[in-house]
Image 1 (cartoon, one colour):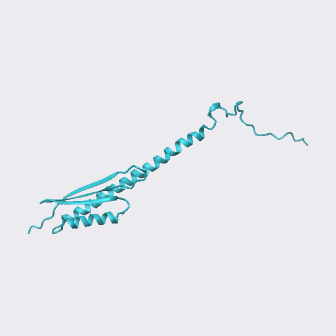
Image 2 (cartoon, helix red, strand yellow):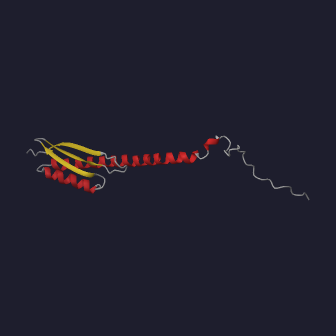
Image 3 (tube, helix red, strand yellow):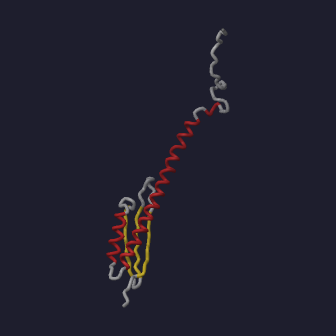
Length: 146
């Protein structure tokens, strides 16, 4: 029966006298922590900016839909500017009252057209960065001709 020899130990990579792992400079110890401290806030701002832009696009689509609905309501035979205003305000409320802040609806009418403008601001995710949204829809006024 053979006599067991010494148990092999794991081989550790050699280090230089300063303790740095092979392929690293002696002054590079702790650089990964420093890089993480610098990169993490930048990545966080990048993610927040992406969400901010996404909310801006969403708010833009909402004011566009509200302006179109307001124009549809105001252009009908016998409709008033107030009907267009009420429908645009209702759409803003139904599609998300928090998605557009400080909304304003303006309805103007000429002899043959009605124009509805909806403005507001998108919610701010990044502090200090506010973005405005606006949409205008012009439509011909319907007439009944017997």
